[in-house]
Amino acid sequence: YQMPLVAICIDTVVAKGRPYVMRLQSSADDYMRATARWAREREMKRIGFVVADLPYTQAIFEAIEKPSREYGVETVLLNRVPSDHMDFRSDLSRARLENLDGVGV
Image: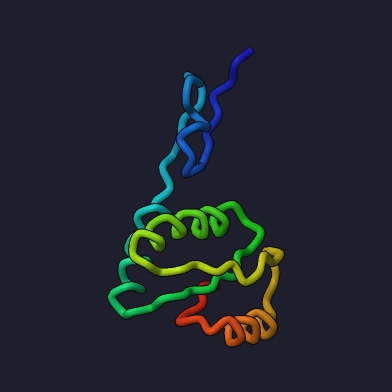
């Protein structure tokens, strides 16, 4: 028994060779390439990220790593947090210690 599945994922391997899987392209790659370019244009060297425990925010972080390297911007994972996390004081304190040029939450 086969049932169509809609998979929201930036990884192409999800649908490869599976005729019953429809893959929707996330625009995270495009957004994060533009974000990395924007950071470089502002001479940012290091950007920290607090990544919520959600598929989309994880995809965003993964999507910015490669273009950031290409633009000479280092990405630093400050923390992985639950999706309902609201108190970023300790994350921002760590960001100050890490000497970052910006923080993505």
